[in-house]
Length: 68
Image (cartoon, rainbow, N blue to C red; front, side):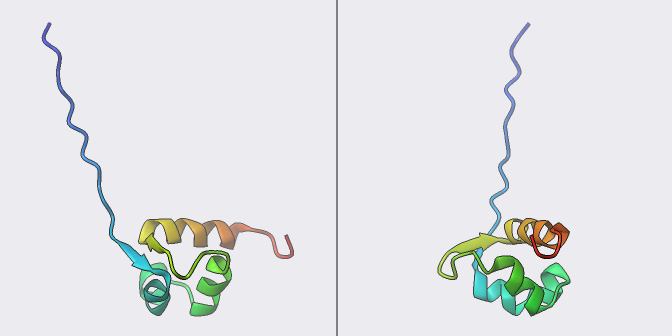
């Protein structure tokens, strides 16, 4: 039986500066800039992130209990 070659398509998501994502926090993540700031305060401003990466960080932050 001949082997089938599977071509894997890797989706390369565009990365953006954190400040640019913050400017569009409401439209992109449906959160206020205050919530965005709280969730991303430990990230480096000089680095770039995908929308998916930041969305996952925000979602995780929103699920944390207060004071922990």
